[in-house]
Each structure stands twice: as structure tokens, then as C-alpha cells.
Image (cartoon, helix red, strand yellow):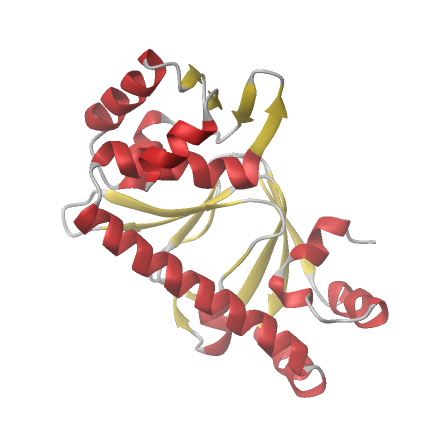
Length: 225
């Protein structure tokens, strides 16, 4: 039986228990070790993936060779939906940030489900709309927000998916290196580190290896606006 977290994916929203179970059983399982690449930008593919456990990062490489980290995904999140509707080259590279377990749905199986369960299409369309909105926000942030603002926004976003409430604040296990965090906000590692050090000096956060504790969520959220 698939973990309950699988049912959080947009693919399953609106389906009853029987349909959810049947769809889950058409999906294969993939397990990746930390640092393993699921697919590269430009690879052909027509599969959709749902994260069951662990973290996956989606990135693109620019003309200068610098990687741009577009998103970090965790349990219940879905990716690869563009290639399912329009089979062709992958637009990103997907890499496991931690040991990760995925469920995979083939294009042919999805088409069959779309015919009988329009709710599946609605869930995927909602996912595509969310991804487009995220892309628009990212472009706006690069134009209108300074680096500290983008860092604060990234911390708030990561806390919403990977945060764990502690007495002193929200512990965020992002599992990203300093370079990956810099790629996520579209800035140099030195500039991002300076912003993080400033937040720590103000008492807003506490820095820890591959994680951060947000001590004052209100101030960090305010800086993210």
C-alpha cells in the first residue's frame, strides 16, 4: 500500500478511495541515493513523478555553465507533468538532494486515467497553474527584490514544506549546500551568506549545517515581502 503522503499530490485530488488505490497501483517505484540524477535537462521522457520521501531539486544550466536551482520538492509534490502532456526533451535536471523515493506514472497510463476520471486532469492543471505562478513570482523577485529579500522568501517557502516546530522556533531541514541555496535565490554564495549572517546577527535565525532555525518568523516573513 502506498504511503498516505502519496495522496497529497495534485494527481489524486478529487478521487475516491477506490480510484486512488487503483491509480497508485499503476505507478512504479524509484529509489535514488543522495546526489543521484533522475534525468538531465534535454533528456527525452514522458513520465510524471511524485515524491514520497526525501527531496528532489530541479535545476537548469545557463549558457555560462552556472546552474540555476528552480525548485526543491518534498513529499507529496509532483514534477515532470509537462513531458506527460507534451513528450519531448526535459526542461530541467532532477537530482536527489537526499535519499529519495518516488512514484512514476507513464504517459500511456495517465491518458487512460484522464478519459475516465476528469478530476485527474483538474489536479494536473492546478499543478501547472501553480508552477506558472511560481515562475512568474521568481522573475518578479529577480527584478524587484534585493538579495536579502529573496533569501528571506526562500526560507519562508522552505519552512512551509520542511519546517518542524520547536520551542525556540521553526527548524528547517533544507539539506542544501550554501552554493545550492545561492542558486535557489539567484545570487552569489558570498552575497547570500552575508544576508544569512545579517539575519543571524539580528536574532531572526540560527544557522546550522544544511538547516536553519527561524527564531522570528514574523520578521523574516516581513523581510520577504
